[in-house]
Amino acid sequence: MKLSDFAFMTCVLSLLSGCASQPPAAPDWISGDSAQYKSAQYLMGRGQAATQEEAKDRARADLSKIFQVAVAAESEDVQKFKAGPSAPGQYESQASRRITTHTSQIIRGIQIAELWQDTATNNYHALAVLPRLQTAASLRQQIGQLDEATGNHVEQSRKASDLFLKIAAASLAVDAQQERESLQKSLQVVDPAGRGTEPQWNSAKLKSDLDDLLKRVRIASQVAAGSTPGFAEVVSGALAKAGFMIETGPSPDFVLQARMEMADLGFQDGWYWQRGVLEVTLSETGTGRVRGIRRWTVKSNAPDAESASKRALNQADSVLKQELRAAIIDMASSR
Image (cartoon, rainbow, N blue to C red):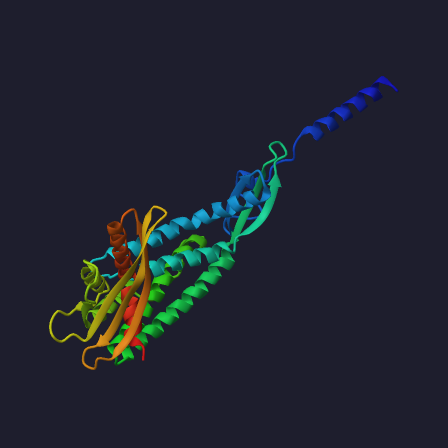
């Protein structure tokens, strides 16, 4: 072999050896924008971990964080509604569940578009994407359905002759718009322009109209004889928070009778346990007709019996403040 040939072969082998030792180049989305999944068309999340599945989960979680701001803002709005001077806020738990549900539905649309392993570290990198156009179209469709439902509920409330049927329909209208607001915030995240869909209804006006209807209902509260000390205050406080007019005179429209029966389960595993039933009954004053009964299970434990009783009372207070308004509307509007 000639010297020149030997030199050429040595150079080729050196180049091949150098190429073999270099790891493949990382995809563009690892540290920057993706040429394939452009930000105007997709929301993106990235994840890195020692296993493929964990990297995928982290990428989904990274993309989901984009919606957490919207969820936090909507939850804050719900809390403000709860704390408002004229807003009873019984929608708090319902609205929070709807926010979580809608966010979960959006997250289920997330796709793992690419997966890459860094041979230098053996770590996996995952890219999660969510199509903006498809997701926005779905959200706009749901918003349109809620706006249509709101209009139907408002019309039903206006036409109903029975006060509680008016209240039930007005309550559904407020409920639909609360749901719409959570979808709107998600749509603003997905929409590249951040505009979403302009509301057709004034939520504050719908809530104010509902509050005015509630104040037209006069309800007196009664508790069963021998009730736990403080239970009467819990019931009247929940009734006031529900937005109804508490009647202390001789002629209420309805009477709300409440009882809470607790059984002492004794001392077990270092705790005093109690379990019982919280029950409310709504009756018409004029006819004595029972419009409905609602029951909830109450249970508590504490290091001592007195604290267990207090915790049971606190639980009853929490349940009634969250659910009494909806329960009364449902009972009174049932035929």
